[in-house]
Image (cartoon, rainbow, N blue to C red; front, side, top):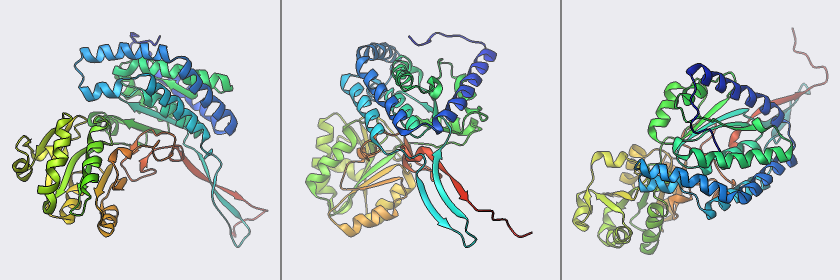
Amino acid sequence: MAEAAVVETATDLAARMREIGARAREAARTLAGAPREVKDRALRAAAAALRERTAEILAANALDMDTARGRGLSRAMLDRLMLDGRRVEAMARGLEEIAALPDPVGTELARWTRPNGLDIARVRVPLGVVGIIYESRPNVTADAGGLCLKAGNAAILRGGSESFHSSHAIHACLVEGLRAAGLPEAAVQMVPVTDRAAVGLLLRLHESVDVIVPRGGRSLIERVFAESRIPVLAHLEGICHTYLHERADPAKAVEITFNAKMRRPGICGATETLLVDRAVAEALLPPVLARLMEAGCEIRGDETVRRIEPRARPATEEDWRTEYLDAILSVRVVDGIDAAIAHVNAYGSHHTDAIVTEDRAAAERFLREVDSAIVIHNASTQFADGGEFGMGAEIGISTGRLHARGPVGVEQLTTFKYVVRGDGQTRPL
């Protein structure tokens, strides 16, 4: 079982983290040149190990769930933490889907010949060593480890203390896969302590780690930005919107809004704010809100919303800026598409936003002008997922603009280099 109770001095922990970084750097050199068939063998063997060790994984998860309940974690957070046979099988399938993807490493992105005869190619290469810091969701262990491996990167995983036992049980399956394929076990390492100081030490391993990917709440992201000496590929928050345009199909409005909020309220792609055109608010809001409230969703609305649905609580300015990750939805009536786009761009987190309408021109304008990593027409915001995009899995949704935006999958975990071939060319003196 994992080393949950390890207590170390600050000096010991710093030395251990440096050792983890050094082993990851060495493993990354091996992975960078590993053939596709070897990496895929490791992924498939890890998937088989997940299935074989399901009972062990669920027993570890039960320990985490008991501790989490004792700490008073919210229903949504417990849902993010909980594993069952179906979710373990989904992790195994995810690894197999990653194995089935084309190998991005070595892909030639562009090639041209200069007048002097130099042949120049832009070629995908791994990032190197990726540090992933995440909270609650133990399935990230399998997704992140598998994606980094496929992209030829070594990974250092630091899961949240609430998912400690679950994540380590999953990590053991990844190590079994690496061993079966003859790859270094240090290719996917797990920080073996719950000490929060380990996070700070990981953020300062600039000599070993090439990029940090944080996946968690605002406090984690802010800490990473404040302390990291390593480039950060960030997923900030999921303040996602669904906008019901004046030409929204009523049936689609009900079903899409319900799914976007209530399928899994605790994930980053869950809609947190519903916007409704004033022209159709009287007609659309009653059935939409009734469906949500019957399922236990709390509604926080502006004055118009509360007049139409008296059970709604008053929404405050802070509600428009809040990622609830729970069965709570803020609802606002807006004066047309101009106001809807302005609201999304002002209050959103540039994650995922959707419009429901049968007006194609309005849809195209929303898709063009909303400044988010993912924009959606007539579908649930909960499709914001690398697996749903055909990427096999994702490490997270990047809400920034540099290097990667949207789901961070295999291709987004690579960079490129220029390969120049000549035949004696020199530059004039």
